[in-house]
Every structure is written in C-alpha cells, then in structure tokens.
Image 1: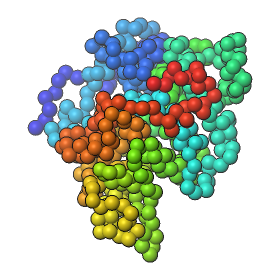
Image 2 (image 1 turned 90 degrees about the vertical axis):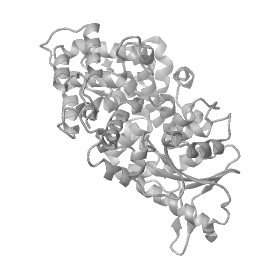
Image 3 (image 1 turned 135 degrees about the vertical axis):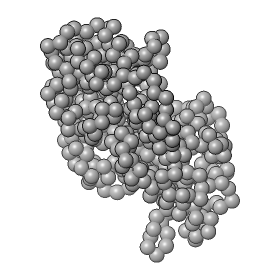
Image 4 (image 1 turned 30 degrees about the vertical axis):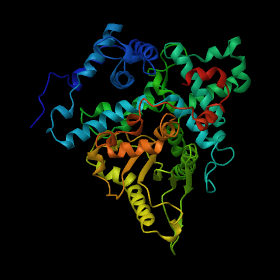
Length: 486
C-alpha cells in the first residue's frame, strides 16, 4: 500500500523559483533571517513555515550553485515563498510502500538533515578543548604532537576556536556579516592583544571563507546521487566554509548556525583528516576513548574500570565498565560519525551501520558473557545485578536505537543503547534521580528504550558539566563568550 500523495512541489519547481533571483540579492536576506532566528529561535515564528537553518542552508546552496546575477531582485516575501515551497518538497517517503524500510530511509534522511543542526553549540565547542587539549591519551600520538595546531590552523587550537566564536558572535549581531575592517576599531584591542589582526584574517580566509567559484566546484564534487528527491540531503559546502566573500563588505554567512561546527570536534576531524588522513583520525579516537572515561568519572557513586585484558592472547574487554549498586554498564567507545550513505539512506546504509557499530555490539555481548561465566580476570566485576551495554559515538547516530536500526546489528544477551558524546555529557550530570535506576527503567520500557538518551531523560535536573566547563574556560575570551553558553 502506498502513502496517499498530497499536493507537493517538485525539486525542479523549487530550484526554478530560487533561480528567479540574483544570488547577491537573495544571500543577504537569507543571512539576516538566519541570524534573527538562530539557535532555535525559529521555533517561535508564527508563520506557516519556519526559518529553520536546514531550509535556509539549502536555499543558499541552490542559489549559489544554480543562480546567476542576470535575474531580478528579491524581497523578504520572496524568501518566505521559497521556504514555504521547501516545506512542500516532494519526497520518496510519500511515494514508497508503507513499510518499515521506507520509514527507516525517511528518518535517516530527515534526522541527518535536521537534528545535526539542533545540537548544543556550547557542548560542541567546549568538547573540542576538553577532549583534545585537556585529556591525556593512552598511546603516543602520530599527529597531535606539540605544534600540530599551529601547523594545521596557523594558530593554536584555543585561538582557532576563539576565532570561530567571534565570527559566530559577529554573524548573530550583524545580520550574518563579519568585516575584517572592524578589527581596526578601538574596542577590538583586547582581541588583537591575543590574536593579531593578520593571524585572525589569515585563519578566517584559510578555513572559514569561500567564494562562489570554489563553492560550485565543491558542491559538484560532493554529489553522491543524481536523484532530485535526495539532492537536498547531500553535503552542503557551507558546512565546511560557512562564510562567503563577494557579497558586500567583508564576509557573509548565509547560515549562522553552521559557524560553530568549524570549531567542534567534527570540524577539527575533517580539517585534520584532509591533511593527515587516518593517522589524525586514530589520534582523535584515542583521545575520545579517554575523554569518555573522564565523563564516566563524573557519575556519582560509580566505580569506573578501564578495559580488562584476558586470556593467553591478551584479548580486550569493552573500553570501560561502570559499576554501581544497581547496575553494571559495559561501555564501548566508537570514534565514528554517520556517513553520506546513511544520511542519504542509500542501499549501502546497512553495510555502513554494521561496519561502524557491529563490532561494538559483539564486544559488549562478549564482555557480558565473561562476567556471567566468572572468567578469572573479571571476578572483581559483580554478577549479581542487571547488566547493560552502552555504545558511545563521537557524533550522534540519531535513530540508532530504533527497532529497524537495532535489527541490523548483532544480537546481544543484554540491553544495548547507542548514545553520542553529547548524550553522555548530559547523562552523567543528572541530579534528581539515580542514573542507574533511570537506565534500568528505560531498558524495561518498550517505547522509551528506542529513544536517544537525551530524549528519554528529558526534563530531569542537571548540574553543570565540569569537564566541559574546563574546556570552554580555556578559550581566550571566555568572559565575553560566556553569553553564548547555557
């Protein structure tokens, strides 16, 4: 049975509507709307559509990739009409059979499109320093050695994130714009005492700014499919370089919400991997595993045990074992992030999710079995209480706990959940209920056990996360930047 098809707008009609207008006329309107409705403020809009960042990002992408300067001007009403069309875009979901496979594909695409732009900028930015400069890894790094950040960014990691913070703050206050000429203003002296103007501009140009020609080339190269119904879910080059030159004085950010991502662990990952390939990824993975241990250490009244080696071959357990009076939690850390095939829900999505998370399920199941069988190396781990597994990923896999995703993975004898670093940072700061009890109750609930941890535990009281605060406070102007934090 197919879904009833409502009146929808084809991607061709939508693109044609955007192409009516000069990019130089449309881009400042998008930037102003984005700055006005940034950080979730779009939820308060009373219009029939919302100025959501993913829609604004796509309008900007289409205009930059397909528009030309020989078209007519644009007004706020034109942008509103385009955004309304975006909400009515044709989609595979209304055309496919009404089964779990089509639902899975739909949720993968929409979560990759929308939820990634609703993560906490404070957590993402604070996690960068908390993980990379405030956490000690367990092995000798191949890339992250003294001076790596100066070599990669042209400045220290702290200053690089500080530049991202100031560019973001300027975009929010100035309709998406930052003009390097503003660095000459008397009030900028405290900034220039930390980061010279020449360094600030060089870093911005090298990592944050692009032009139309480079944007078009990257947009074409990044395409994975020619399917017009999947086009809007493809990678948007504004994620890699959120500012444009050539649209008025200085730089213009069409979508302000994309700026913090450059200073997040994900932004650092892509910048580093582009230079150092897998060696950089492995160094970050080692730090991330240790970082997860630091977060677990915030769990009140919990004992955190690092991985256990066992047997003649020195095999390894899960990365961390958390012991409380009510629960034993087996934690496996995976420094992975959703790939393009997952975001587009291609036929390779099943292979990709198994490749990235399958081994973690096996590790949890194997460790649970060793504890239950009283393997000698695991005798210190209690076997008289419930056991659960937790897979912690560096970036969110938003629907990984849904039944149609769970069945893609190996079976396990204990309940297993997938959570992101952000979920874990929130979990360990819950103060109004024992965390172990919350996890046990969630696992026994057929519905809530399919949610992400943050959704399942929404509404609980939290204390501040001192590991994140340490990272945030290491940036050069935390006093002024703190107004961007919760």
